[in-house]
Length: 288
Image 1 (cartoon, helix red, strand yellow):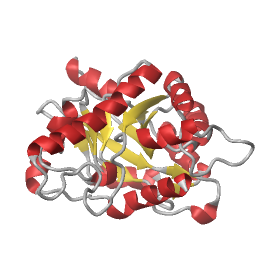
Image 2 (image 1 turned 90 degrees about the vertical axis):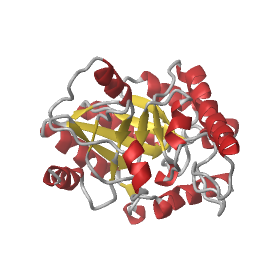
Image 3 (image 1 turned 30 degrees about the vertical axis):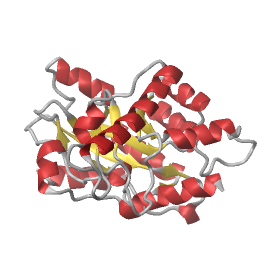
Image 4 (image 1 turned 135 degrees about the horizontal axis):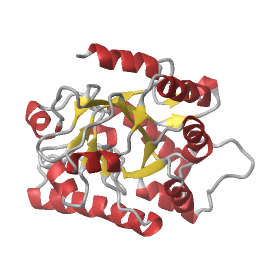
């Protein structure tokens, strides 16, 4: 049942992902395009070998390999969130063709399919994990399975440590236990009629709980946060930022750049099956 619940939550993420935010939130959190300093964000979810399951939020390893080959062969440089922070702090410039590769939800296939391909093509990616999912699989010995193909299992803490130590993967915060939509709260957005004080406490404690755990497990505190379903509310960024986050990932499909207000926002194009990274890059280039 736990695997089913996580599977349903993952599918729900795609159904309710919010690509258009209120103008007031856009002004506060979305990056402003700056000539010569823009970059593209790619958003992946699950990678499975079964082509019959490929769709809006599932691609095959072959599709992923073609993406990484295209990016590598066409001069794209994959940059991690922590590197974006360092570039901003040092007043540096991004590589001419910068791409940030992201995987949401923390599936076990990140270790068994994604990591080998990243190594093969010399690319790097951030994998955004949900702490409560990882706790469940770690407690139930769900690691690596048993000779079966990786499926909807999620990463255990040991596997997260392996990825973090690889040098090819950075671990991002996707909330500890707010990756759900139960009719009252959509992801980490504010509930209707929820007080400022209660919302601040709930959101801060959730984000900090996962960041603290990741720091203990990997020795690195995450700088990046991905909004579950792309949902946020006015004030969300300030609360999350107070937990040590400085890079924010949305589901908004538009170019992005370093944000002048001190935050870095990665707007991400969803990579669904049949929509290649090459096509997305062409969309991105046509936006200027």
